[in-house]
Image 1 (cartoon, rainbow, N blue to C red):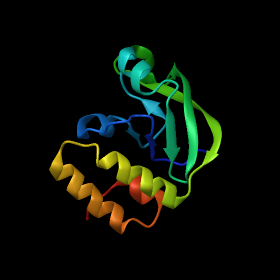
Image 2 (cartoon, rainbow, N blue to C red):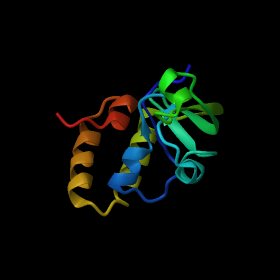
Image 3 (cartoon, rainbow, N blue to C red):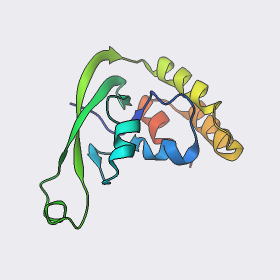
Image 4 (cartoon, one colour):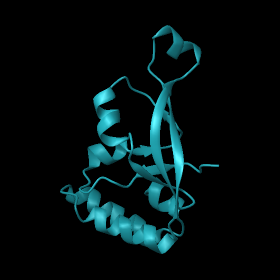
Length: 130
């Protein structure tokens, strides 16, 4: 079973605005923007909180009331297990590498502090600053 949160790992250069859109706390896409979905989510790899790598395969419209009535766009994202699992060390190294691609210095500094204090992949992905 997929453990959330998850984060997309195929994006080469991170920026604060985009990476926050690629951090997911559940398996739903809350937008009707197909271009964004196709470019940044579909067929992309995600690392889950337990280190399992998944690939987003497609989306289906949610069956909840607001989504059915068109008042809110909500789609369930379907993932397949890629058969790869990262360790905490591998995930931490990945985060270091991606954070150094960011241009927003304040975000970079804060995230580096969080990484240094992290004890799990979940901590890395959630990146909560105390």
